[in-house]
Length: 468
Image 1 (cartoon, rainbow, N blue to C red):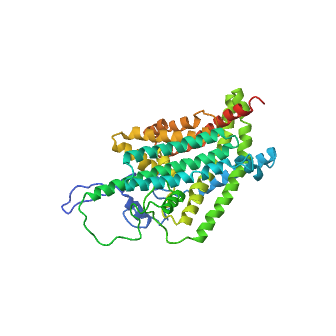
Image 2 (cartoon, helix red, strand yellow):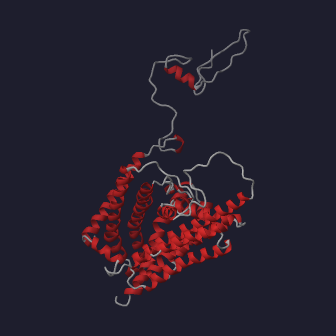
């Protein structure tokens, strides 16, 4: 008789076929072991409950586990506690620095002189003139070439006139200059889109006039058709609407949701006060204490000040993003019953720099895509060069909005935007997934404070260096 075998053989079982063939061994399987524990199979034994199965550890990638909500909550709690300590330390060290009255002085030097408001209101004449120019082009008063030259002159005059006014009017504060130039930049982009879209309508109308006219049902009276859109009412609706791209018929919501409107209004008021408080209480002291290490070129202290400034700066930037792109733009859209509410996408999941810039500011992205990027592609320019020109345009307006109000030209904002081009290439080529997302977050958290410190240092040296 055969002795029982161990490790893989049940027992040297002698199995003869009906003709009395030779014996052969049979290996055990997983089912045999399971059957044995239940009192079945070739190795049936005492009934012992199983407590082990084939499985991976929960944090292993092979486990397929993905519910980390508790860890996310832990991160939020740690973040709140860490910032609460910083806030308490700030209060103990500096006291209460929040002063709402001081905010008024940032916009006005003289309560009887409102240069920024006058500069913005004066642009109304140019809006009316643009509408009349489009009507004259439709009527054939002057040629398309003459109209194009006139449009370009008007747009360039907007930028030059606003810049000269900010640089030469002494009663205009830097904050008032940023506000007025920001409005002029938005109007520049809107008027460019308005004139571009109406030119496309004229070209389409001329092309249709050459085709045989075939009736196809009745016209839809609820929609505006060219040139019926060339009215002041239509122009002002587009100017106030939260979009930079003009079209004849915007999607409209059916009614104004009063509760939604009041929630957005409350968010706007609360977050604005929070932004002002954080800037006065947290940002300003940190920036003031950063000037001496920059003057002494103490590299280690400079890095420490930069990292200390990164936290409040990034928090303020995130709050500003929510205040502007969600609360304010949704408030205006709801008030005007503007239907397209896609003002941002999931930029926080960006795994590349290009994805971030294409998704964090949808109105600007749509304008660049429609009026700048695609026209260059149609003219035969390759994609990389077209993207570089888009970043170049963005860098120009970033520098325009910072250097002109501060009345100093250092090109820090311009260079910061242009460094996004090689950074986008590097992240897209060598990093992906979580590593790419981390690189995007690092550029946002560290890059902005560097530019802030550069401008504040230069402004401090120019205006207060001699007195210190």
